[in-house]
Length: 109
Image (cartoon, rainbow, N blue to C red; front, side):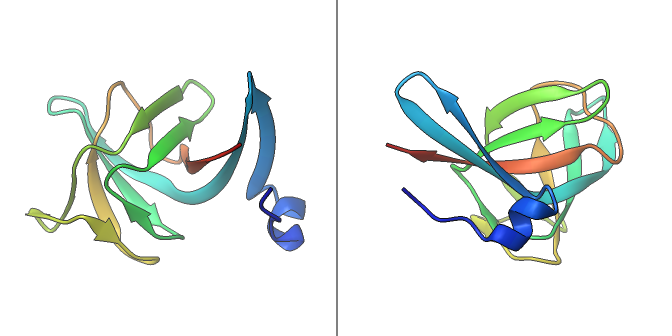
C-alpha cells in the first residue's frame, strides 16, 4: 500500500476510500478556472502533474464527475502530459464550474 504525504492528508489534499476490492486514493491536482459549456471543455490550473489515461474526479458544490482523461491540450496543441503550474484544456463528460476541485484517482490493490 502506498504511503501518502501526511502533510497533504492534513491539508485535505489527499485521502483514501474503499470501493469493493480496490483501495482508491485521490490527490488534489488542480482547480477548474473556466468551462466552455458549448464544447464541453474545462480549463484546469494544475498543482500536480497529469497525463492522458489518468482517472480524475471533479468535485464541487453542484459537481460530482468521475472520468478518464482522453485528451488534453495546452494552447490548442494536443499533449500527453502536463506539469505542475500549467493550464490545460480537458474534454469533460458533464458540466463543471469555476473553482471546482480536480483530483487524480490512484487505484491500489
